[in-house]
Amino acid sequence: METLLIVLQLVAGLGIYNVWLLRPQMATEYRGKGARTLKDEFRAYGLPDGALYVVGTIKLVSATALLAGIWYPSFIIPSAAVLTIMMIGAISMHVKINDPIERSLPAFIMLSAVLGILYLV
Image (tube, rainbow, N blue to C red; front, side, top):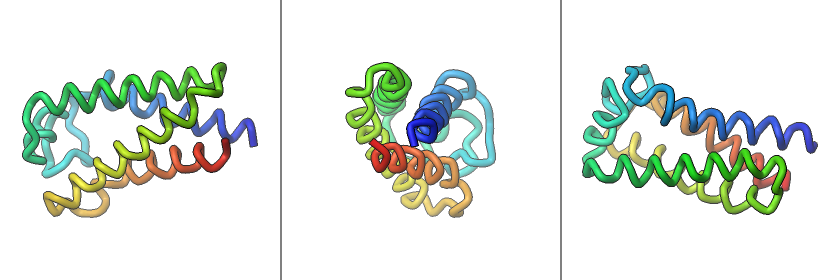
C-alpha cells in the first residue's frame, strides 16, 4: 500500500504542476467552455482575474507539500485535504457553466487520486 500511496502522490502532485506550470497557455479539450488558456478558463467561470493567482498558489503549494509528503508524511493529510476541496471546486465550476461531463474528467481523476491518498494514510 505504501507504493500505491507514493504513486498517487506523484500523479496528483505532478498533475497539478503540469496544468499550472507547463500548460497554462495551452488549449486543451478539458478547459471550461473551450477556453484556450487557464486565464480564459477562469473568465469563462465568471471569476475575477485575481482568482487565477489565488487558486494557482493554493494548488501549487499543496502539490509541493503532497510531493514533500513522500519524505515528510505529516504533510500528506493537510495537502490532500486542500486539494480535495480544490478539485470539488473545479468540478463545481464546470457544472456552473454547463460544461459536458468529459471536461470535468481531469478534475474527477485528481479528486479520486487525492481521496485515495486520504484513504491510504
